[in-house]
Length: 331
Ligand code: NAI
Figure 1 (tube, rainbow, N blue to C red):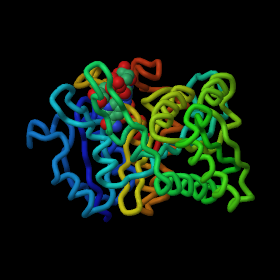
Figure 2: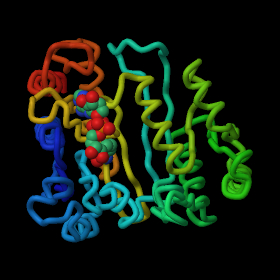
Figure 3: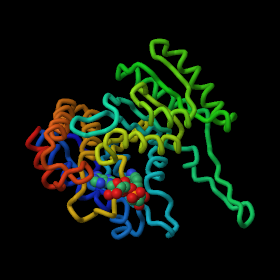
Figure 4: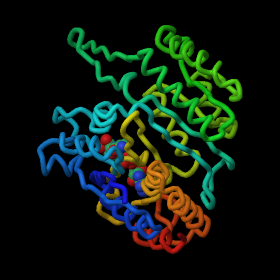
C-alpha cells in the first residue's frame, strides 16, 4: 500500500475522481487514499481555497492526485494551482500528448511531451500599478530555474529513449531573459550529444503544430508558453478530456489532468474521466506500480478503439457512468 493524497477539487472534479478511483482499484492498484481539500470545496469547509493542511498532507505523503480546482475570481485569492506549484516547488509540468486510437484527428502518430517551467515567468505574480491606467507585469527568469527545467527535459528525453529536444523561445523580443534561457539550453545540450537538439521560436512552433506536429518530440519552454502550447497540443489528439499531466519537484509530485472544473457540465454526470485516469496511471508509474499503470493505459486505448459508451466530448452519447463501466470491463 502506498499513501497518496487525493484532492478531488470542485466542478467535475469529484465526478472524475470517483470514476478514476473505481477504475484504478479494479486494475489492482494498492493505494491508501488520504483526503485533502482545495478549490471551492475548501472555501466552503475552511474559508480558504488552498488550506495549509492540504499542503502539509502533500509534504507528508509526497504524492498527490488532484482534480481541477476553481479559484474564486474577484475575492482576492491568487490562483490555487499556481500557489500549489510554487509552494511545493513543483518546477516541472509534464504533459505527454499522443495520438489515441478511435479518436478522429487530422494527424496520426503525434507523440510529444510538453515540459513547462512551472514556478516563474509571468506566473511569478509580480504585477503592480505604475500610475493609474498603467500596469506592469514582470516575467521573471532566473538561471537556477532555467537550468533545472532544461536539465529535467534532457534527462526525461534520455530516460524515456526519446530522440529530440526542442527549446521554444522568443529571444528576438526577449533577448535578455530568453537569450539566457537559450544559452543555458545550448550548454546542457552539449552534454547530451546522442539527442538531437533544436531551438524554435514560439510562433514558428505554433505554425508547425498546425501544419504537422509529428516531427516534435520533447519540447521545453517557460511557463506561459507552456500553458498555451500544452492546451494546443491536447487539441491535436482529442482535447482536454484525454490528456494527462504531472507537476514534478525534487521532493513532491502532484498528478492532474490538463482540463479545468468544467462548470458547464458539472453535476450532470457527463464528464470524461480519461484525463484524470491517465494522470493516475502516470502517478502509479511514479510510485512503482508500473504493471497496473500499463493495464490502465491499455484499457483506455481499448475503450477508445471500441468506441462504446464514450462521453459527448468524444463525439458519442454516453456519460461518466457508461465510460467508467467500459474502462473497467477493458482492464
Ligand atoms: P475547462 O477545462 O474547465 O473547460 C473547457 C471546456 O472543455 C468546457 O466546455 C468543458 O465542458 C470541457 N471539458 C473540460 N474537461 C472535460 C472533461 N473531463 N470531460 C468533458 N468535457 C470537458 O476550462 P475553463 O472553462 O476555462 O475553466 C473552468 C474553471 O476551471 C476555471 O475556474 C479555471 O480556473 C479552472 N481551471 C482549473 C485547472 C486546474 O485545477 N488544474 C486548470 C484549468 C482551469
